[in-house]
Image (cartoon, rainbow, N blue to C red):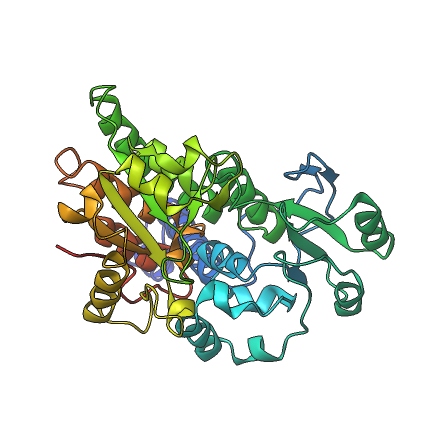
Length: 393
């Protein structure tokens, strides 16, 4: 006769195989989830494994990289903002930059310094706003030099850098942002192994862009208010810096406005004389400015300035002789926007803001402040805080 008690004692402490298998699978799944969460936060963890596939930059050049770049030189400080959209510590990737603090704004620069004090001591190279110089860049020994389409670097200089083992990648966030912002950010993602993060922001921007495009499509084709955008308003007594074809002018057209500068300026930027502006008598006046205009008495806004300071400087700019008599000013359709934020990878904030100014009724439910807050929360390593746009009313 079988001893059932003995059998029970022999089986004590043992789990049936199915239960062991389930516990093992759960443990593996927990480990995978934990690693994924850690890798997404890790500054050095790429979002995808580099496979050495060739990339094509904004000059149509093919670039092959053995893996994610860890030593990058940039010729425009605004690339820090772009890198900060996809990487939690963008300064950690840099070995040289132009120290063009004016393009960031002094307060934003301080925010970067507070997070990454080493930024102040990085080697300085030429800015894209000036003549290209290879010597300082060569001395910094980057893996990759990220240069602007507007830098003027020649093919011979690129060959010199690449002959020294420095890959050159040309990007553009500023000359033709509607054409080039997405591919440029996608390239940055591939360069740094942060493709997934780059695609997430691209999708976010595209969703918001579609909302504006759909709203404009519902407007009558004849409903295109004349817009005068004065860049760096109050910088000098002379009138008036303005966008022509491309750059900010593209934003105005996209939101359903008619940029009067495009009728007179063939390039992306140029000058309009006051007589021309008065003759066109625009419906909407938008000024751009920033901390760089404080000494000149122009439009000041952005990090470090209150809404009251920004509005007071906008009122001063709008009260100038000739400008004060414009239909837009008389009707109170006077607005100011940060130049640092407009020439930025965060252009969707400018696009939404312009839409609410040019067609306030059609876009009354669009909230650019909420959009910027979401960008700060979801993407930016160094959030944008401050008064970046203001209206007289």
